[in-house]
Image 1 (spheres, one colour):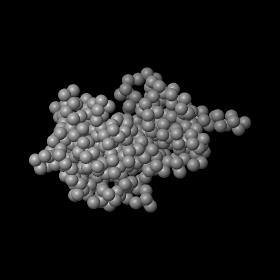
Image 2 (cartoon, one colour):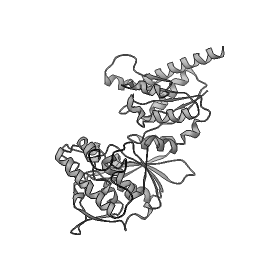
Image 3 (cartoon, one colour):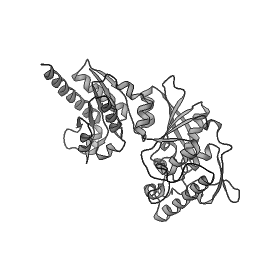
Image 4 (tube, helix red, strand yellow):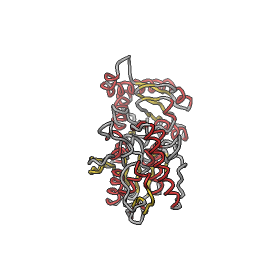
Length: 385
């Protein structure tokens, strides 16, 4: 029997690779002769670098870059280990420009910059990478990717001819953009951006209004940041760019979705689709008898581009059943069943507090997988009798 085990991480508890390992171990306890193929996944957000590096036997590169407020931070990106497709890297913008790097609530997103993300991209380009997957999400920034562009050599200038300061608020003073000194490898590189939101750059559904408050922006600051991004978009559009402020996904990661399209020529895609293409999920699914997926909590949001839904869609195309083993079942999980998931099993055996659930997650995952395998085996034997 051939089992493909393709979970996302259990956020804050176990990585996708660790989840896959425990499910595989539990399954083999009940069915020792089963072939278990582990494919750790992610949906483009937190954990994407780790999952893709694990799935391709790649490695991490760690460098010192600027954090969102100019402080030095150590940030890592992944070099994928698959051969024959050129040198590829995966970068999570949150590694250099994430909200978790905000040292104090007093630090306003008005001054946060994506410069460090640009430094990671530059480092990868200098290392010969010519295909970069950029994961958005968890940003501290609201600068439209201006800082990233500056790190890659773009010159953003005020009306007085001064270089534009870092941060989203400074974009109000932007007069012109000169890309003549951009890193030459940018044009040679393929950029894919994992983006799972459709918010435009500006307006009531834009980066500042929707995500600014999550980063500590007051109502007045939200209005200021939206004006700044509008000025940024106006300068970009006046240069003849085909990328407009209304483009779906442009508002992701404080407008980095917009900046990636403008300065990198990037294509925005669903994160799980990028990840599955990269790890050749479809090819590894061939001849599978069953797929097991999972995530920390399965609920109605699973259908909004999360990894288990991506797995389900791919498996349905070739008629392979999918079951989910999850940390917990939330509101709307029945919608995932209605979408075609064969069954959902949560790993918590009895009412316990959250800390206890985290501590017992490995044991509970393995036990649940073993029990599911035993039931599957019994059903198979019954069908043959």
